[in-house]
Length: 195
Image 1 (cartoon, rainbow, N blue to C red):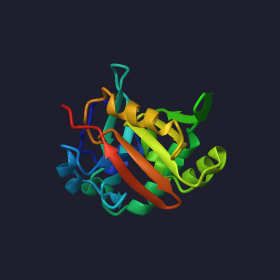
Image 2 (image 1 turned 30 degrees about the vertical axis):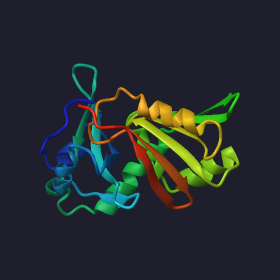
Image 3 (image 1 turned 30 degrees about the horizontal axis):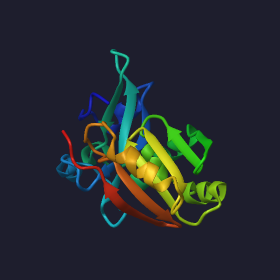
């Protein structure tokens, strides 16, 4: 992702025809975590992850630009209402793909900032029902990919390896493995920080 930054008022950012408001995950261990002071966010996973907002739009160079929404830009807007809109935008574009492997079923999601899908209100219910398990192991090798399997299955070490071997540069999200059961999201491990 490129184009991070921008200090336009939220009304002007929202009015950009091709921009979309999306949730974005920040790791508490990210080298950029200090920027969260300027960005309204919700802590999750005992404060080891944070859910913030970004406007995402194509750039003239055919890349994706991400512009974090700051306290100043929100102004009189309700952060909760904007987050609800962002989560709805993300949910509306989600596609979950399943792949049967020798070790069990592996579900995957891909797309711009799809890692924040773990915070969707019905993510756990839908995925745990699909996998027939009460505890999920979730790999986030980058902000745009999610891999999910039943915790304790033979796919769990596969997900750990995908995160450990991720070549995604550390930005807001440090590649991580999560454990999710009901409303509880825990960070099991993170990939070592790389530049």
